[in-house]
Image (cartoon, rainbow, N blue to C red; front, side):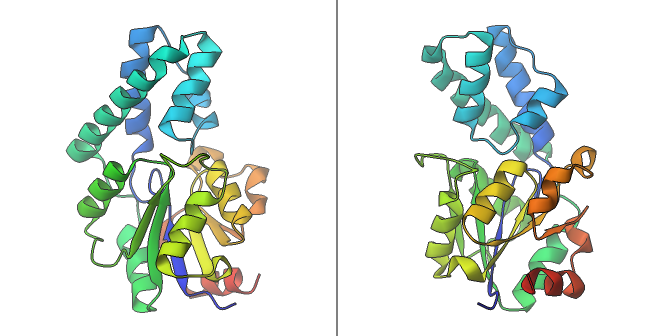
Amino acid sequence: MPLDTVIFDIDGLLIDSEPVWNEAADEVFNKYGITLTHQQYLSTTGLRTKEFVDQWFNYFGISKNLSNDAEQQIIVTVLKKIKERAEPMNGVQHIFNYFHNRQFKIGIATSSPQELIDLVVEMLGIKSVVQATASAQKLPHGKPHPQVYLDCAEKLGSDPTSCICFEDSFNGMIAVKAARMKCVVIPHHALLKEERWAAADLKLSSLQNFGDLHFGIVASK
């Protein structure tokens, strides 16, 4: 089926928010005596905030009864920090212009809450071209489960096999492929050479690098 729909993740792909999430988690986790290493953060990239908190509370032996409050504290802190100083990732304007000019349906599918989606869409000035958004926050399962991508495609009126999706995390890439969609992955530069990205249809170092040649490669797979 010809590709006519593009769906984007947000965190670490459209906006440089991963450091903000880590910073917010540090501030909140410190209250519970938890300190995470950089590698530990990278291992949970793409998870929903609830899953992120539950995983590390379980690991460090913190009562699960405290996890909901910690989750909400992190989200509130992240929204504040993103609004204050988060920067767009390189190539955001380019990639939205690329697909808008080709009359693609455009959506966003993320593990982050709807409040963050709305904030980032406004900050990036893409409200007029984004036709549907989907958050996995309240779904039974987050990424790597494909539901959030399937929900976004349904809102756009698109068949999953007509969708090309952009992701930066391993969990996100698996969610896209499980949804039977094409995946372009743009990993964190420290993880770019890892072999696990081979499951994607295309790997790039930046949104800015995507062009007709790359689209042809993905479409032909």
